[in-house]
Image (cartoon, rainbow, N blue to C red):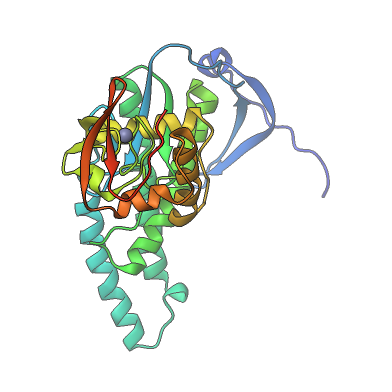
Length: 297
Ligand SMILES: [Zn+2]
């Protein structure tokens, strides 16, 4: 006991040529035929930041795993698969409950859980790799994941949220370290309702696939506006990590009011206002709201 064991290792050209420094630990695996395998591990140095390529915005989709601001729908089989597994999971759960067994203590249930986590992890990796392959990517900006999906059970949503958060975090970290891709995270609150031109937040700004700002009258594709808003929030340091929707709005409104010389509370009044008529101030067409004094610069 306590004596070192010397293990002779075979030379491997691929391993020798791979970049990185030798780690001070080895990986030991025991295969099914009970053979012991010792592998050295190399720690690759951080990749230099990518200086060219696209800055891409990603949204956690409701119909596919990810939607990009370039119009991609990635991972369309993700939700159909989860829904199918969700039905099986619910069945197991009902069965366990009937027999008075806690799911956590049941091997079959745990295995199921594991399978879902592995699937999510593989899919996240596969899809993000495909995205990088398709475009040269310099940076990825992602909304802080809000994964709740109305078509899945609460139990499945909980498993999915945990699994996907971990998988996405791990994958993005590795992409940043080994490929030099910049990763940014932005709070998703109100990004689809905020005007990327003037900063006005309103439900009325969104008209299906179109975005028409109720304040500055900017018109553009809704997805493009959303991804621009995400980009702008990132470049202005307005990521608001983990803040609630209400808190985000409480910070966006004063910025908007200060920018256009409005009084505190005017943003909310603008949102509530039903009657609008257009006025022209300088070269920009703006909307004045009856009962609201707008001092526009
Ligand atoms: Zn606007």
